[in-house]
Length: 200
Image 1 (cartoon, helix red, strand yellow):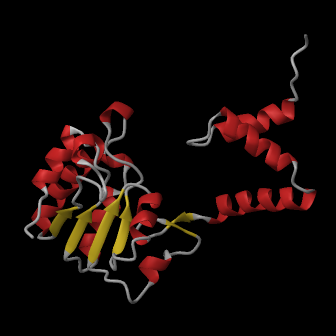
Image 2 (cartoon, rainbow, N blue to C red):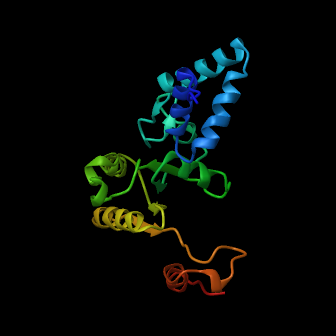
């Protein structure tokens, strides 16, 4: 029996499958969805991808994504520019922003130190962060890197660079999630929860 293979369709599936978190079945669903679009809708999708790719770049101050010189947070006069929240990715900045609790500004590293993946300090935007501290009046830097070995190593590395500058460096608290059961927490999470305990 001959194999059924439509080359353009297979290519479209392959392109979707390259996206993070997209498996073969989801890639197939997306490809068939795109094929069912009208010509105008398909063109709108293609235009949106092309426009985003050509117009979005890094903010000249915080290295987050923007289509202008400064992102909306850095350009805002009502934000507290003396407090910088350092995150690994633009998605992390969005997650913090969605809490509506943080009123400071961000700095996006675009990764974490990971010698196994050949990612060192020079591959991140650490130099840009240090330049901000030299140019701006900063009282606190919140290290909001992920609670992983790489995230912890990155937070420690940056905090050691910032301490001599007289800037307060804090780390996000982490441990047991709200609504979580202790019996299901791993030892590392429990240890961090005990370490970061607060008085009540």
